[in-house]
Structures are given as structure tokens and as C-alpha cells.
Amino acid sequence: MYPGLFDGIDRCRNVGDFRVLAKRRLPSPIFHYIDGAAEDETSYRRNTEAFSTCDLVPSVLTGVEKVDMSVSVMGCKLAMPVFCSPTALQRLFHYDGERAVARAAEKFGTLFAVSSLGTVSIEEIGHAISSPKMFQLYFHKDRGLTWSMVERCKAAKFDSITLTVDSITGGNRERDLMTGFTSPPKLTLRSLMSFAMRPSWTFNYLFREKFSLPQLEGHVSEGTNMAISIGEYFTKMLDPSMNWSDAEEVRKRWGGHFCLKGIMSVADAKRAVDIGANAIMISNHAGRQLDGSRAPFDQIAEIADAVGGQIEIICDGGIRRGTHVLKAMSAGATACSGGHLYLYALAAGGQAGVEKALGNLRTEIERDMRLMGITRLDQLSRENLRYR
Image (cartoon, rainbow, N blue to C red; front, side):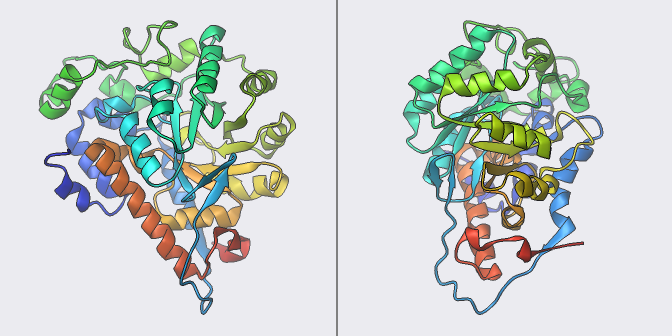
């Protein structure tokens, strides 16, 4: 099913290994779109580096023959405390795109989130998997588009919607400007050689299913029929006037489990509780929006102190290891999510790659729970942490 890929994937033990394979397989503009962030990419690097600012303190002789790593997120029980955060344009990274990630997430009993800028439709994902499904909503200037996506999620029986609140204008993604990345990709003198040197990717892009953004069809042509960078799309199409009343209206129209993605402050976390959100994703958009913003991990403790027990707290960003998950949950997170942790693997080998990446992470979490001396994740607390 994945000819020529298994040997490389089998040797991938961590996110960094998958990144190396992804770089080999993707044309330069596509790879750097995944790999890059805003401006100096300080926040992007900091998202992972933040976990090294504290240490875990294990317990011993506790009897850990069996461990339970399940968590509950927005009414859904997940078999592991990490889920696949929503990311755009997945069929640019592998021709199966969201289909591959959804099937892998279902196999591991975790949640899969679909982006407004996804390349597989809400309806197809709704029918394809029975495991928990989240939709990530961008609040467009075109209200007809915004509300149509909410209604389509209702019809497809999605479990939750998360409204992204940190993208009312595009971040300064200088790597994309350097490589000329757009959606859909366009050939330039600068990128021609890179596409030519990746004939497998180029063949799949040209001769398999036509690239599209089905959530947007019938409303806008940008991104599908009209090439545009993601930063330009955010600036041109998303509504910079979005406010708390708009967020509350989304929640009311949706009527189900509701999350805000991009919350970074205690004050905003309290407002999320006030409008009736069920969860928040502490996130800086993988450092792709405001460079110099805090890392999500650094914000968990103070937000948990303010609203813990009133709302679920998801640490989104920087997760690379099982120990990162345990540190985030010790600080007060309900669960964790991430994009890079599976996107490199998707590019490296489609569904098989994502399954290997999720399997690696699950194995690490199970091993690390035993080494921490815990049998359940709710046994973690800040007593397990010591900050440097």
C-alpha cells in the first residue's frame, strides 16, 4: 500500500527522524511551509524548548503493572492524552491528506481535527471515521461561509467545534515569502527545480485527485482556483473585527461542545468560561502568527490556577515527546495536541507514517508513566515538577 516507504518509516523513532524523511520527499516550498513559522521563529523553537525549563520527579515502588492513559476531552473518551490538532492543506503533504490522518487517529482511539482550510470535506470525514471528530473554524468576513461550515458540521455529526481566535490577520511567515509558497502551489523559476527533483510528489499532485479546499467551495476561489499564501488568505478573508460576542454567537449556533483555540492569557481564559466554552487550547499557532509570544507550556500553570476545574485546558504546540505530555498534564493540562508531531510523518509516509508517529508517542507515554510511578494520568500534579 505504501511501496518503498516502510524501511524508512520503521527507522523513525521520533519527530526529528520524520522531519528528515519529509524534507527528502517534499518540494522545498511545501516542506518549508510545514517547517517554518513567523519572522525569527523564536516562538516556534521556544514551544518545545519550554519543556526543558522544568524536570520530572518520579516516584518508585508504586506498583505499575497496568497503566491507563485515557482522558476525556469535550465529552469524548480518548485512548491516549494526545490528539491531532487541525492543520490546513494536508493533501499537499501526502495525496491521502486528512483521510490518512483520520484513519490513523481512529486506529489509536484519539481525536482528529479538521481545518476550515482542509483538503477533504466535512461530510467525507464525518462518514469515514467513527472516532471523535473536531472541526476548526476560521471566522470569515463572509458570514455565509462561516455559518455554512457550522451547519455542515452539525449534519455530519461532529463532536466539537473549536474557533481559532489568534488569526485575524496573517503572520509574517518569511520562509513562505522566500520560497514563494502558495495554495495551490504555483511553479516559479525559483521553485521549478525543487518540484522537478521530487517527481513522485509532483506526479501525485498532477495526476491524482485535483487539489481543492472543499469547505470553501461555493463561497471563495482563493486557495483553490486562485493561488494565495496563507498569510495573505488570513489578512484578506478572515474578519479582524471578530470579538467575544462573535465567539458567543458561534457557540450558540453550534450548540455542542465548544472550544477556543489560541487562548494565552488568564483574562481570556476567564472570558472563555464566561461565554460557556467547554475547553480552551493554549496555543500560539505553532509560532506562525505573533513571533515573540509565550510558549503554551509556560502559560498552563497560571491559567489552570485561574480556571482549572471550570473548563478543559489543552496544551497545543511544541509536543515532541511523551515526557512533554506528562509535564503539561502535571502543570494542569487536561490533554495535549499538536500538528508537527504528525505532519512530518504524513509527508514521510501517509497513513503508515502517522500511525508510526502516534505509536511512538503512545509507547513513550506508557513507558514514562511507569517510570514516573503512576498508573493514571490524574495522579500527576505540580508535585511532580521542579522548575530550573
